Length: 167
Image (cartoon, rainbow, N blue to C red; front, side):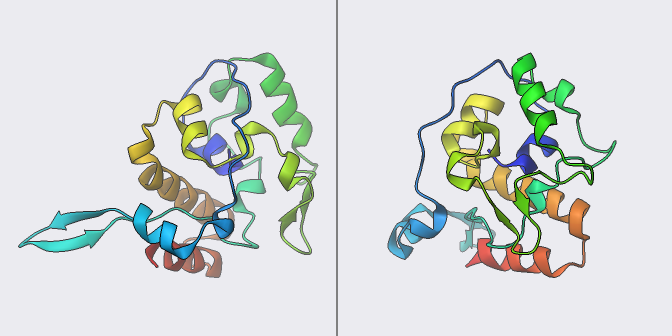
């Protein structure tokens, strides 16, 4: 579960076990991505492509764990005290995750990151009660809000994300 979702989606949840590791979006074939992209009818029979969530390499907005009072606190999100404690233990003095490598904008523990740092349909369903059919829309919305909060609404990171989810 990405930290973006953790700080954006104001749902409460019970303690859960980590979801099984899913392949990173970049490991999924283009053909699979195209199949996963849903279309809906948009006025006068035109087709509207819904965004397909994907992580944009070297963004890291979700790794800014202390986003301020506009976002829910860990106590408002987690029911399990051990999740609250784990989340707080990851917050560095500057508000960024202690495992976020600022020079490369990568996670030093990506393969072993906590379950709440994973943006995956099963995790969203388990943690937030978001149906898998709504995953792309909710994940995209959450990332957009987080990127705006961290980098600004006119940022290169936001432009890259919006371009990625539309292609």
